[in-house]
Image 1 (tube, one colour):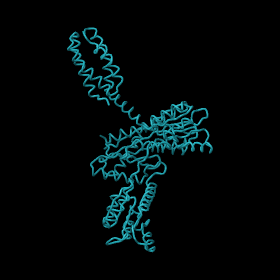
Image 2 (cartoon, rainbow, N blue to C red):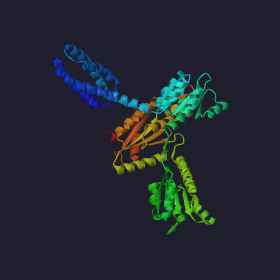
Image 3 (spheres, rainbow, N blue to C red):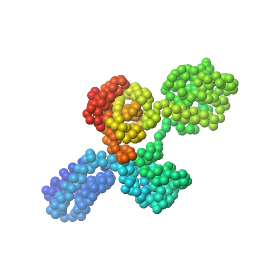
Image 4 (cartoon, rainbow, N blue to C red):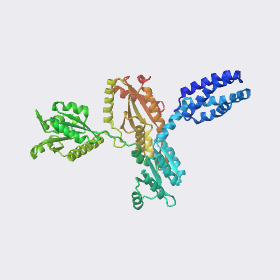
Amino acid sequence: MLNRLEVHSTWNGLVQAWKPVWQASDDLERWAALMPYCDRLMGLAREGEVTELVAALQPLLAILDGLQSPGEPEKEAVDRLLPGIFGVVREVCGESYRRNAERASAEEQLPLVVLLTTHTEQAKELLLQMEHYGYRFRVFADYREGAQFAASEQAVAVVVELRPETAAATAISELNAQRLKWFALSERGDFAQRLAAVRDSAHGFFVAPLTVNALVDAVDPLAYKAKDEPYRVLILDDSATVLATIRKTLSQFPNIHIHTLREPALVLEAMLDISPDVLLLDFHMDGCNGLEVAKIIRQNKAFESIPIVYLTSETSEAVQLEAMRHGGDDFLTKPISEAQLANTVISKAERYRGLRKLMVEDSLTGLYNHVKTKALLQQSLLLADRQQVAVSYAIIDIDHFKKVNDTYGHTVGDKVIKTLARFLRQKTRRADVVGRYGGEEFVVVLFDSTPADALARVELIRQGFAEIYHAYDEGIFSATFSAGIAHYPAYATMMELMVAADDALYAAKRAGRNRVAIAEHSRV
């Protein structure tokens, strides 16, 4: 990485050392005082891989390297070179150069998708759109070259157009040998061709023409794999031996986090702190039994769907049925086999996570729904109060969305909503909350974010979304959104924050739409 401060400082030193040389060009000692600055500047340029500065300095260093009896000709030659070097130094030390360098570095880190096709002209629009969706995208008419490039750059996916006159078969063999995921693209989508693609280990199949929405939906799970949190398992048993045995068995699974408890009286507090995906509950404990503990847990609405698995030596069918009727989900009879324990815990946790996902996610976009978003906002505000940090709350609304539905149809409108949802998810941090409030309205909760930070980030999202094209039967169109931002603690309660952001949103719409406004008290 280029050290711009040192470049600037070294250049200033070079200029100061040049003045004495210019006044007495035949003094070799004055030239010797200049040379270390020139050498250091070249070293910085090479370390930072700034080729334009290296090129600008090479003629200067060539003159200095051959210097024996300096005089006016050498002074005049260097004097002609210095303005050009200064121009390059000023450029590379400037803010725009830094942003361009950071952007190029970021682009190199974007996931790569490669398309092998003879229809390169038709892929130009796809090329532009994939860049807006956060991908590097390359198109090759030469299938062999494209396959080699995909292998060398570790592409997340390759799309191969199946045409008899191409080297598709060779390219597919190369991709399979490199264990790269590839998708078939064909004008035909009949069973025979799909079967052949499956037998060639195709990861998926597209029927031409290939659309950006179809491609993004297919490659997103490969490029942006969701990292699920480990399953949280709470074990309540008054036997230290049993707890140690179960912990030893389940600790073999890295996707399981184990919490143990020996005191039944602490179970509600533990449930609140841990939010377990499964509760393993001893049926017989001193002072109470598991059935009574289960009844207490089920009285709390927040815990009514968490799976409860009894650990028991009880073999009475009547007792087991009674326990199941009062909130139990399964029985594990002691001694418990390791395979049965692991299988029961994982299957119950998976099912609970799946059901909970349906309860908190919006069905169209996969974002948090209205109810869950409000709950997470409240949690964020409580945490912000404890940690004394700021929270910014943004409401986003697609401009003239009714016109989109009326003009292009509700199916296309749904695609616009899904595109914005994906864009928001991709451009926000893991700690942020992104939810759909319904219709064309979205919410982003930006934890530990000042109004200025939030404005900059939402502005980038707004600009990027406006550059995306959406397809319909007769062509393409673009859409924009307006947003309002409010800030905690300027607005101290959740309701005040939401109302202020809503007011800011309508201010943005009144000002002409396609813009972001900040609530008055949130300004910095």
